[in-house]
Amino acid sequence: MRARSTRWLIATALAIGLVFTSGCDSRPSDTELIKNFHSHRAEFETIARMFREDRVIQRMGGSAASGAAEGPEVEEAEKAGISALRVAEYTRLIDAVGATRNVFYRVSDDTTVFIIWAPGLAGMTGVEGKDVIYAPKEALTPVISDTDAYRPAPGKQNVPVYRHIEGSWYIEHSFD
Image (cartoon, rainbow, N blue to C red; front, side):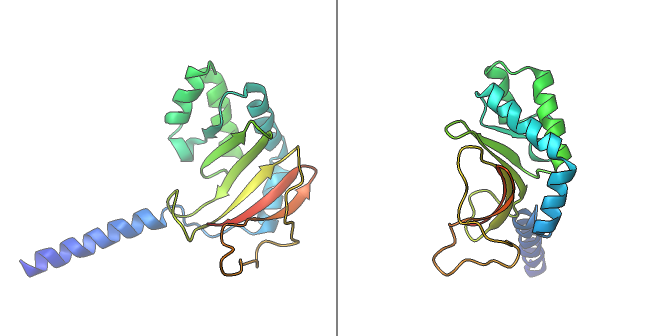
């Protein structure tokens, strides 16, 4: 009996560990993100333009985020009148830029957030992430020269920092 409960505890701990470490690939460097941005600039810009044109959807996932044209964002898009072909184009482009989770669009300021690296589970605290952001209406601050070595001061975990790529494009390094 004791061996069975020990095995059950070990199996449960391993399962929980897998859930909490899913998506825990190594953090991409600023250099890697900038290189990826330049390699896929047309795709990044097309996605941002599509969100501005559609203006009725506020998130869309690639196949890694939503399971290849499935999930709630697809249902929301279809209810808003976005065609299945358009949804498939979002998915293809999001996969091409390497967004590991959803891409978000804020109608209020036309900002598009491409989640490139976000380990752990949504809503967890103590998690950091790196995104590429298109912010055409305002410069994002604080801008630093390199987000790779940056660590927030105690009590400042919810304050993201940005590295300017060019034009209205930035890297965001956040600590929740």
